[in-house]
Image 1: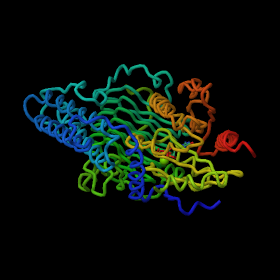
Image 2: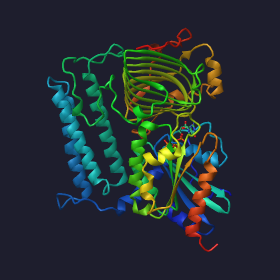
Image 3: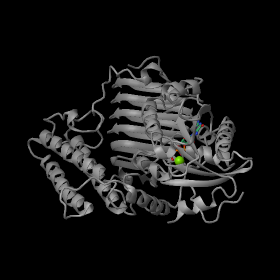
Image 4: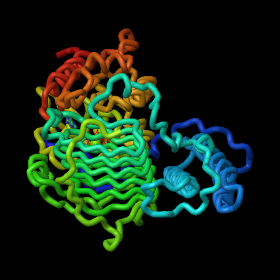
Length: 345
Length: 185
Ligand SMILES: Nc1nc2c(ncn2[C@@H]2O[C@H](COP(=O)(O)OP(=O)(O)OP(=O)(O)O)[C@@H](O)[C@H]2O)c(=O)[nH]1
Ligand SMILES: [Mg+2]
């Protein structure tokens, strides 16, 4: 049957502006229906009341963030986190009463503050051996993880807490500090499998060959080189890393100060990221052409530079990512000479 | 008021069903819809917003709403609940680490009154990947049996990559919805 003419047919991958317009229109529907929480001043409209409380909370967060550069940075960070949590709560309470534009603007502000907080927090962290950009000035006060609402920043490398993951381990490398891993998926029988990298600190990972899906979780100061992924790469919670990878889809969440050298068929996406940079794929090893070709990745689509930031749905360039300047980019990395070993740890 | 009222008008005229596809990001919703519609699946971007497809399926016309599952846009799911006849929840069966998230989001959704009458099909997708959990295991982790008395549901293992299981799932869903809303045929 033919598509209905009066329904929007939105092709995957294009027309983002249209998507957004539609989202806005649809979200208007729900904003009219809801029970708004009572505002605390009776003469102002709920929207005005929200806007004035929001402005106050924003100011509090901003001044706490700027105080992070001073002596008692840890306390300021904690104060900033609390102020941002407060903003989130304000938004959540008012979300039913707010018109879509105000809601989006408020959410965008909260996301920006969150990102600024993460940057401030990461600037306080001690330098690690694989730090590529030496942003850290203040090494005196190791930050405390419980001050932020985000997941703990320091992974426990020796004892990952028992989870479904530990009960049902698939193929992968987990819970190591300072190790080098080489895996050739062509010699083992894992080419139709998925692969996981989790809880690694200061590790180097070389994955030759092909796999169907790659999951990456909680990496600090690692360098990761990957052949071809037939499906998607899902990345969550990484910091201070370099990734070189080719895949059909690349989805990046909660990455901070990390470089991605990509070949990708569709547009890479980021969500809750800050300080991430992008460049074209630079991996080489004997047989890589065949692996890429078999996976439909032989063609350079140029999509490595077409990043969509789900936290920045505006026409302007997102402040959360940029390209790696050409003079800073890695040269081609040839890993032909790296071979699998028994145990690297 | 646009879209929804238009759809409501056309609906029922010619045996339409409204199917809502949701699930975590990366679970394979868009790939499933394109595959079942016989379209190219080699270049798919993560969904920013949603896609709508009208697919002729046996004697029914399915209006399939494929909504993006990235965290940032999950809060928009509720804008699509109205008038849903069939709900498809897609699971990435090889993403074991996020199954807790997946269960929480699903049960959140099922509390929604506007979806109370909808039949639920759970697709345990990506079965082609070695090491993916089997449908029975997914059913257990997602705690699906709590719905036994409250809702028509079924879990089907599938692969949007090979196409396996997709028709079995949609056959069940369409039959189940039809038996409720088009009783008199
Ligand atoms: N191996 C394998 N990969 C799959 C399968 N289904 C989907 N994929 C891959 O999984 C990734 C995500 O698929 P999408 O269809 O974009 O996922 P989605 O659920 O629409 O994601 P959002 O739009 O973000 O909500 C893509 O790289 C697909 O190629 C499957 O059955 N097997
Ligand atoms: Mg999609």
